Image (cartoon, rainbow, N blue to C red):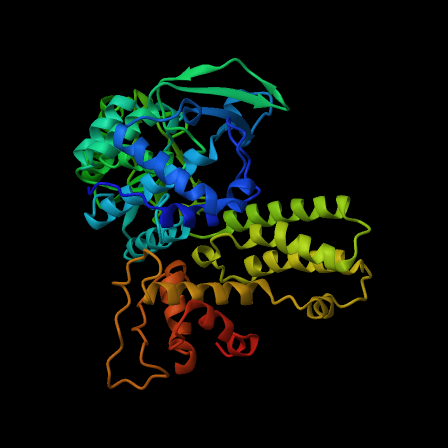
Length: 509
């Protein structure tokens, strides 16, 4: 890794991009004032940052965090159901941005990070992880091949990172000496104070873990977990930060034993690097439509992992038969609950406020990662549309049985959710074909040049045996993509492509 050079222009750019509403850290320096005084502040920070990286020293305030607990789920009186969010100094965050961008440049240019790690990385997201994963499962299932998934659950993964072992890995991956010394100083002698409703706890030392809420923390964790896949011999591992799935195609009982062998290897990695899995929270999901699948008891720490028929991964519920009934039931239930909340709290608001509230708080829950699970059965399509139809009645304050909900939706200018999902899938296809997202495009085989086609970027249809595969992203979207006119396909940008996908165009697909 090359030595980091800091200049006024780069620091000024960071100051200019500051969010003025961000909370200040322990030094009480707020981002709004720093942004307003950026021309005066930039040269001073450049000198401080340069000295800091050269000497490997960090101001004491930069190593202290005010920790605000953020509720996750479960019972509110239990501390373990809260995620610690560290509020650190703005000046330190800017320095972390400089360090992080240089480390990422080094890691990317040398292809160091594990390719199936999609957390905290450019052009990667939950969808970029899920889409090829579901495609892989469907392709196997289409050939009547069973796939066993082991959904792993880390116990406080970020908090358990050993500083000494992390520094060893940083050096192993070629992080430059000055940068390594700076990170060591960043991790050493850290302290934190918990703040709840203005009341502060005693200050305590932090001896392990990467600080959550910091800019540098995520990339340090990715480096720490990066060698996990190297322990596995027979199976694949998909990672999104610490969300991990070990999986393998099962064609005989011996394959089950090989998957168990890799689960044992995962336990060795866990012990070597002082991490911890929750055996009672790890589950096994068998992907198959066979009546008599291969069965096996998978064991972690002398604990038989629970077999399940569905499991949530990155916010999407997977079923053993690769159908989306459970996921759609979950999100429609969640959407209806959120709509009920709006009805109780925005009863007398005007239609515009209600409409915006629906689009901001309800509809996103019905569309998260929808390119992955876009349904094909009328039952599931209607379940989703019914939430929007209820929302239209609420916004228009019209609950008469004789009133046309379709007319209400037309008046509001809302496209159907099915239309929005189609548009989302086509936009995803554009991103894949233009390498704007880290999803492999090797499944996209151009059609023969002699074949009659509507544009010059058509792809061969994928042969499918099962409906779950036929209506999955690639087989389904390729058919619709091939119908698009050349003028839309040749759009120079994603924004231009999106704008040209008008309701009239989508209606003809």
